[in-house]
Image (tube, rainbow, N blue to C red; front, top):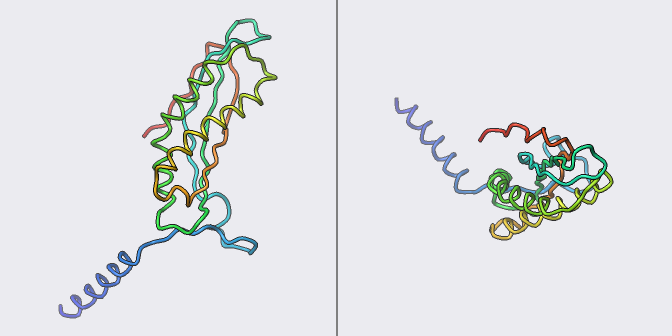
Length: 169
């Protein structure tokens, strides 16, 4: 019984030491071969699709639905005592604000065509990045992360096709 208590005490002391030492997240080393856990992006969040109906040239119907799925790619810039999970959590909470901003901006566009899709993609990136950058400015570890907004998908459908089913929370 005494041996068990001693082992428990050692385990407890070890866990306490680890907890008190704090964790850090570091960027991937530059210019050298790295382990598999350092290859690729550290985290990502794909937001639900935003759908807006826009007047559309070159179609049998006056309106078409524009479907846009923004996403965020997260990487560490500076060694930090925060976690990429914290960054993901903040981004997930920003999804509604990104959707609102995109609905507002895209819904205000005039006549569109397939030829305008590239400029719409740039508008989506600019507006969604601004929302995310503002959130990161409010976070004390925001400067330690590079969050790039991307467009995971962008396509047009006729007005009968609505938003894809949302992923659960």
